[in-house]
Amino acid sequence: MGFGLPGLGEKAETRGPMASATSKKRRAGGDAYCPHCHLLIEKKVGHAWPDEPQRCPHCRLLVGAGRARPTAAAEPGARGSAAGVFAHEAKRAGGDSSTSKDEVCQAIRAVAEGVGSRPERLLMVDYQQRASDDDSLPSLSDVFAAYGSWKRARRAAANAP
Image (cartoon, rainbow, N blue to C red; front, side, top):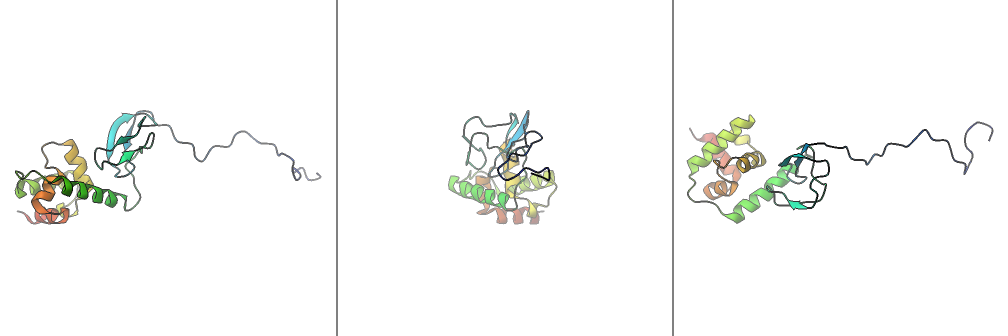
């Protein structure tokens, strides 16, 4: 019309394709973290991992095709939700009665020192991540068999000499 602007129903000129707000960034050889518990599932994977749905070895929840996360970053409370899944599974699985309370306390103190935390502040998901990689550490089910809860085990580890 008279102002150099398109009129009603007329197409305006464009300057090329607009970047999609929903496009996914490509990851070449990055790590894959569970979208539920935010723990490492696999190292050096492609951008759309996994190719088909599979269970997380930590929380046992299903990770859909291409749904793994590139970082362990999580929303507030997400790691606490994962801890609930771990606690339920550990209680259900029982534990090895041959693991002593002293061994559990030593393991909690060692993991806490490794992540730079005090034993009474160590998160269950941090312990689970280490225990899944290190066979010398008691499993969470062993911790629950020895103390009945994660909170009691942490408290005992913090107060032990």
